[in-house]
Length: 91
Image (cartoon, rainbow, N blue to C red; front, top):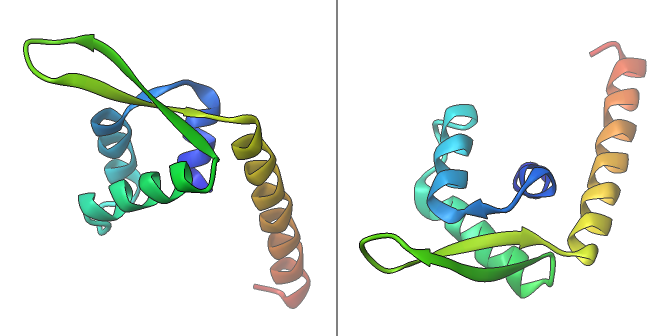
């Protein structure tokens, strides 16, 4: 959900997205973020395109799709329901 949310704000170069997420989730390994990005692409939630070369290999950028936006909206709805349930439980 968090990666899709970030991608709903703008397209990201994979490494930059991972760096921003590491600030929020420092205990998560880099390989885990990349595995999630690969899964999101496989599920059709994101697409990849290559940006301009920058003194090395072309940069791979991730962009959310309409399907990804729908998935994100469902996750946010589910998250809000969970927050309400925990609130009712007094947590």
